[in-house]
Image (cartoon, rainbow, N blue to C red; front, top):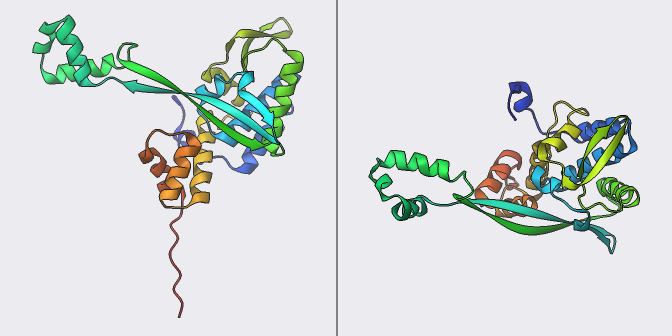
Length: 249
């Protein structure tokens, strides 16, 4: 987040009570669609701790109910930057004169190049999670899913974009809401809450439940679908308590 005070930026992860208070406020939203949508978004964030892009890109077909479980298939888009050697190889082929520059300049240009479409690749992977349909957060997701199927049968996206037309809200099925637009659903309900805090909350709970050990590291890695163990270890280091072996007289 940008342009926020330190008291908000460095705040603790939300408590269960805070999440419930936010859901209570969602119940008071003026439109039925907005109420169902906000609660489902909170349910998904709370239960799965996914990135906002992974939530926003969900399609209705990615959610399935079977054998007492709600299955949700997320699409992970992982950005892989091309290396300095690949950049030099490209220069050697297209503009070898550029190679005469100092290494510091080449490294700076390479870093800028990795932010372009040519300088990185995006790999898509699917990850399916499941939660019992009786779970209180799963119920919020299922209520919204049923509303969507009933009132927007031609819909594709779980969170489609839309626009206000006079006193009505028109759903647009051609695109999904962006991460920033999802944030705008949450902000009126709790100004100190943003989407990544739910991910932090999920990682913290997983670390505490699994323990300060290698099991905890891999549990966090799998839960949050992290690429590196080092990131998972940071969660374990921050939130899991190391158990000291008891000694008896």
